[in-house]
Length: 147
Image 1 (spheres, helix red, strand yellow):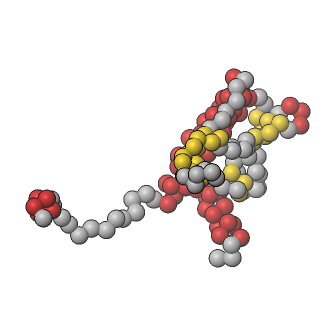
Image 2 (cartoon, helix red, strand yellow):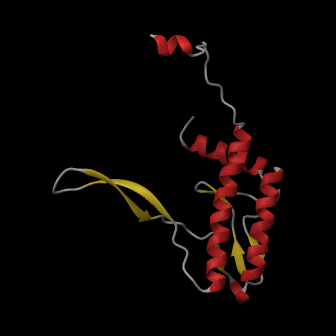
Image 3 (tube, one colour):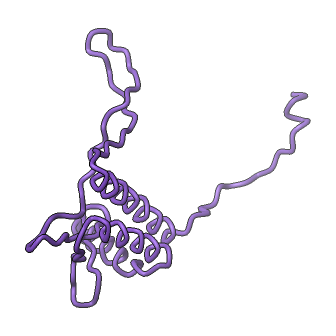
């Protein structure tokens, strides 16, 4: 008991310190950074292959071990008509509406413009310009589960 008596003990509960809106913004920024890395890799002619850690069980021994596996990341951009590139912005599995007319894609001319657009989308997300669209996407997802 001498160790515990030397410490300052208090009665405390952990409070949520992260604002839910800020948490949603950071989630979208993280995904936009992945798209930026994909676009930069395509422009330089290399492959972007992020990895994640996964725990697997060895069938022979039954022992669990952590291995590094490739993470599947889907591109949010595609080649459209007349050589232009279209890009949508997603929050989870939901495509966000980018304006009041329910536009879902951004049209750019080439890969370098795409990189610039993604950087500006990151800035817009941090500034809070996607807050309404994220809230609508969350609402639609909740309604899909019948809540």
